[in-house]
Every structure is written in structure tokens, then in C-alpha cells.
Image (cartoon, rainbow, N blue to C red):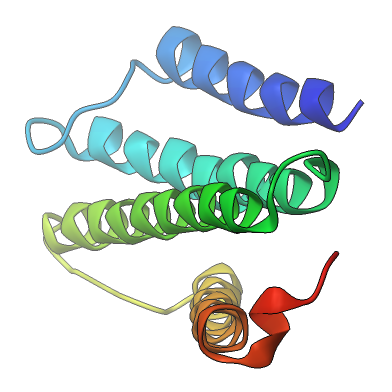
Amino acid sequence: LAEVLLFGTITLLIYWVFNYQGGVAWANDIKKQFNLHYILMTGGFIFLNGHAMLVYRSFTCCKKIYNKLLHTIFFVLSISAITIGIVSAFMAHNSNADPKHFYSLHSWIGLGTMGLFALQFIVGSCRSWCCCAATKPL
């Protein structure tokens, strides 16, 4: 059920962006560049991070090191998508005549969420790869 919801969310978003918002672009069109923000932030926070969580708890048949490696790969891909998504939003706002950053509640909540996400990655990496918790079974 979780996989269906994850794939359904990202599929519907991509369908909406390409069929109703005109697609995506990196530097040619400001509106299309901001559309990239929608896909990458949703793809990073929900789709890739959701898969990272599912891999960590669902793959109990494999060796723990492979489980953690796959979890880490999904999490790093998630952080990469989120970073590119926020850069696309900054670039789209900078292209406007009056560039404003962090003027809405949405942007401040997003900034706080990214900070907590980075903190989670740092603490999780230290706990997982550096401490004795890496050898404990799930």
C-alpha cells in the first residue's frame, strides 16, 4: 500500500506539471523552472525519503550492511533532489524584477524542514556508521 501511495503521488504530480503547467525547464522559463521545484521537493521529501524508510524496515531478509547501504543511497538521493529543488526556487525568484526570499509561511516552514532533515541525516549517519549501533540487529 505504501508503494502504491508513493508512486501515485509522484505520478499524479508529474502528470499535473506536464499537462497543466507546461512542463519543466532549468533556465529558459521562470514558470517552468519553478515547476521543477514542485517535482524535486515532492520527489525528495516524500518519494525518495519514503523509499529510504521502507527499505530500512522492510528488507529484513538481507544482511544489515546492504540494508543500510540501500537506505543511505535513497537518503542521499533525497537530499540531492531537495537541494536542486530549493536551488531552482531561488533561481526562479532571482529572475523576477523584485526578488523576494522567505516572505511566506510556506518558505519558512520549508527552511525549517530542510534544517531538521539535514540534522536527521547528520545524527543518523554518526549513529549508524560511527557507533556500535551499526552492529545491532534490526
